[in-house]
Image (cartoon, rainbow, N blue to C red; front, side, top):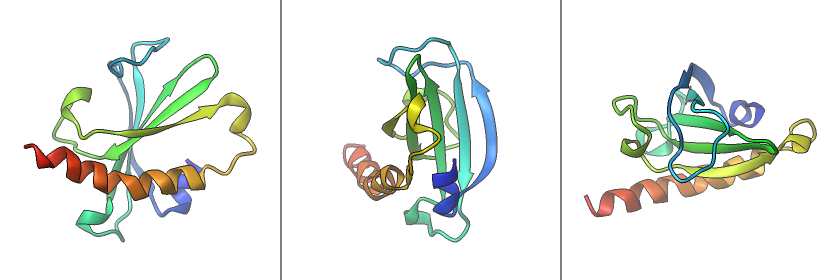
Length: 117
């Protein structure tokens, strides 16, 4: 979460959700999900993110997407981008570059998702 804090995001909400990520193997039938906010960002600049951690035997997948609190089911929400985190990386790795890549690409994914609908 330090990388998100460094980018100006603060945790607004955290919860365990009894769902799975489609087509991704999971050890448990729940997800750790955080809603993060940065009140200094404009509407088109990702002021609110949903970050979901999906743990595995070797680490976690971090899914990041534009938050949409009005939708509950995983498939109904905006599409996410993700990056892996291995257990051995947690203590010593700066995740800032991975997160900044996601924050750069996420608005384009959001626009592409809305072209057809």
